[in-house]
Image (cartoon, rainbow, N blue to C red):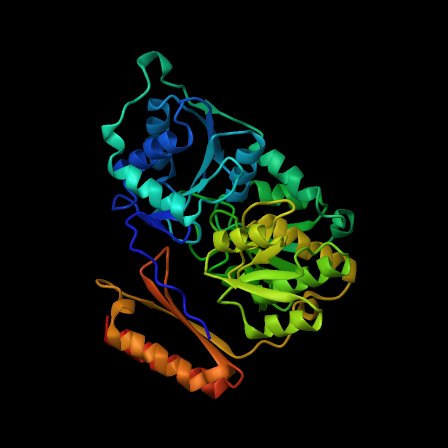
Length: 453
């Protein structure tokens, strides 16, 4: 049984940086300007150095980028504008270029009305909670401090080659690249940040490639395409007679796999597949895998049969990454498709994970429908409940319902109830060894949450 620990209320930062509806707090030009100034003072108090900035394809991206540029240049820092590139490319370039920090303008899998900012340390790592809390405090007084002298105000630079370097980094890790040649693949780019680099990478491998969701217009990102809506990908896989389909999200830091029958493969199965291959080749470090409280009990039981462990963290790939670094793991991820292969990338990486799946498919010579069923999952269901107003999780009734559901399942199941860190949603997940028990426990909490909204 598991329930996420309640966190202190934060006005800007959520599970993955800052995210929200554009031109409403916290996603306004003013807040963005405050963030840029506060981050500059925190990470580059000497007023020198570069900052990498990437963005996805949504219309508001250039507006947010402009506010970041204004804040950074006013502090003497030189923004290096990478343009439209995936989030993991920004993390990689921040690390390799010795930038003071990196910024990715994206709201990930959200629709175009939202935007966000993900922040990376000089090592290409997402900021931890204490750092974010310190930045929140600094944002409140950002306009009160000193700025660069007029002669020290920096000029932003457009940089090229970030996408190409990222492609080379990903392809260098896939030993079976030549065997992907001729494989029928459908790639859904979600009209997002991966719409250029991901097709280029797969074409360089020699794939027989069909690309969908690669015509961004500023408002169609994640709309009917991508990791959160695989209906178009499933149809294209069947129509094309493809061996596999891969769906990225808006900033290409996650991937969802569809097999040759048009069936979506659960992210836990993908993690089990990659972990098994890494373990068999002696490349899995830490004695297991790191995932979140949302991963299925079946994954844990399967890894035990290999003599491996499953460590669980709070939801969010940055928490997975933090645990990996602290305990010597090199592989982890989330059921939602964030996969971290830390020997190469410091964050979730949709293209990199997809290439590893393709490598296994090429090496094994079995259909994806067979490879994608690594273990039998325990019955599990996730329900998202949208709300307005007060957080239902603060209700005594909801807390009591969670305790009731947990007591009902005992050691035979788990209940995870959490407020989304990126949207006004309550996510209710129940899992049990028996389907009826799972359904009963789930309904208890759903009824309580619905009564409070």
